[in-house]
Length: 155
Image (cartoon, rainbow, N blue to C red; front, side):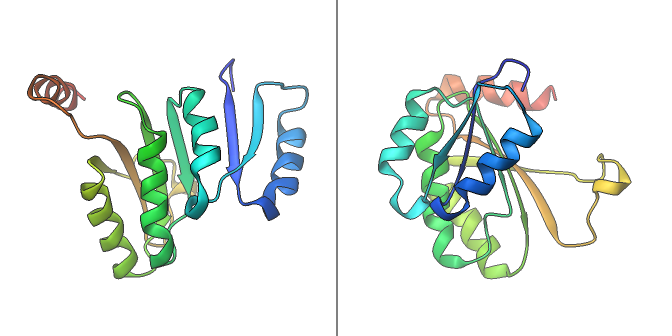
């Protein structure tokens, strides 16, 4: 939290519980907002979010059915600026969902790097087929592509 402006989103039915969790875990913090975000109908909320300048997107366990993959990736793309970093964690329940996710990322000009879970403490390493991905917009120009390539190699 440390001075960041945080927007927590979920479907309308989950917002009261999300608000309760924020009040319990972040008492007195006025830098955390709760907004509805339904990927299948995200024009209004996405506009509110992107107007606020999204630096980071964190999504967990959002990919579990094929019908949601396209709208989910569309939402990441709409919220992403040139410097946005998204971290997406999901359990690989079916190959179809995982394959569709990767195909949609390419179609939306997003590049993804799978992050290793081995660097996490043992308590956070899952026996399930959990994957963690870092997603950014693909470079739009040759000079940006060279700059991003240098950054990736220096990691």
